[in-house]
Structure formats: structure tokens, C-alpha cells
Image (tube, rainbow, N blue to C red; front, side, top):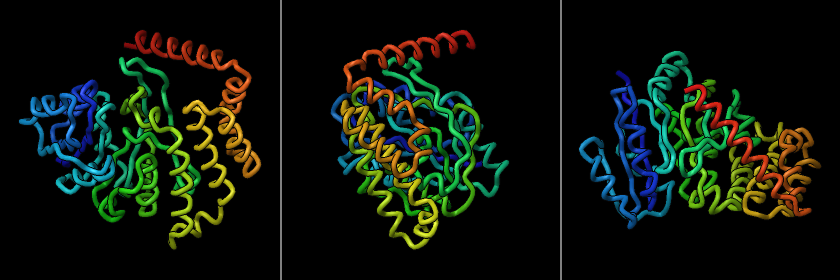
Length: 315
């Protein structure tokens, strides 16, 4: 039976950590090696980890230099043929690990497999359903994003890629996907596998502007990599527009609609199809600029209500 190694990096997320741990331990797939790497939390997380310690393959609680270092530390203690990490405020849906293992069996050449993802709030209420599509290395270089909690990797590909770049704190996962995608086939599965939590303490809310800055860092890095530069050269305009679009999205999330609008316009000038694919960023930025941002919030609230009604109905 294929061993699957899952790491949870954790730091002061006691409100959500138990939900995360249980979502792994309650999977129907039995051959799971689960590790928790805590960064010396002071909020009660350690009590939760110790509660489940007998069911963990390994855990630690000590200071580190951030998420990338914690995850790499966890990877160094794993043995599984398939590996993944699940942040301490996210969770797997039932049957996810079994489904991922099955897909690796169906796709023996795949180095990375990913599913769809829910976006949920602090109370597990669904905000959005994030449905992805089949991507290529070029798509990743052009900042087509994959939902990290729904990603599983072959250990051999991760080892060859060298783990996470510890200098990145927001685009760390995306850069790793690029390095893994260089090695072989990546496969999208049209199933919902995980939930990513959006809350005030999450990086996508607490440090949104940093995502854009790191997108440009990743672009600069790729342009200097001998194996990636030729691929990037064929889609340079699209890639630069993609980085601008990422910047626009997170500037908008950080309450900076004017810079967000400027970033979206730069994307439009550089590569119109990339900007127009996210026309909602233009509309949302304009609403905020003219003082009608409440309309956007009302739309999002109604979408959330419809999604949760549909989920309740299905269940």
C-alpha cells in the first residue's frame, strides 16, 4: 500500500488546528504518515498537538524562520512515496487521500496531481468553489494558480526540485509547482479535495500585497533559470501580464483599489487576454474607487448564501 506523507506547518492557529488534524487522521486511507511542525506557538496549539501525538509519525514545536522552513523540516522526516502539506487553518474533505492515490495509479508518469478546492470562512461556511483546469508548465509560468491544499506530489519529484525556497513566504508553493512541472506531467482532477480558509489571520488577508511582490520575484527567477528561460521567452508578455494580474488581485484584497486598477491596466496593455480573463478585478476596483464597494460586498454575500444553500441541499 502506497505510503502518503502529509505535513502540517503550524503557528498560533489553535482556533483551526484541531479541525485540520482531524481531517487528516479521519481519512479513509490507512497508510498515512502525518507530521506536525509547530513554530513554538503560544496560543494553546501545543495542547492540541499533544492530544493527537500518539497518532502522529513525528512532531516538533520550536522556533523557525517561517512556513517554508517548517515544511522543508517536515519533508526531511518523511518516507512516503506521495507527499503533501496541509496548512493549520485548512482541511481535507473526506476521501481526498484515497482519491489522490488512485489518480497517481492511473497516471504513473504524473509528478503532481491537484483537485479543486473550497474557500471557506472562519466558521467553515463556503465562500466560493474554486474549480481549476488542466495546466501546463507555460501556464504556471504565466501565473495560472493552483489551490495548494488540493495538491499532492511524488516524493522523487519533490526531492529533485529541492524543496521549498525559504526566501519566499507567499508564492512559495507556486514556485515549487513550476520546478516540479519541469520534470513531467501534472494532472488536474475535477473533484473537490480540500478547503482553504479565508480569515483575518491568513496570509492572503494579512499580507496580501506581498503576493504581488513575490510574483515578480518568481518571474525574475524563472527568467534566469537556464531550463525555464526558453519556455518563458515564448510567453513573456503573457507571463508579465499574469504577474500584474496577481498583483492587482492582492492589492484589491489589501484595500488599495487605485494601485489594483493600475496593475490591471498594465496587464491589459501587456497582454489583453490575460487581463480580460479577470474582468471582475476591473469592476471591483472601479466600484471601490467611486465609493460603491459595498455593492461588491453585497454581491459576494449573496453568492456565499447561494453556495451554502446548494451545499446543504446536496447533503
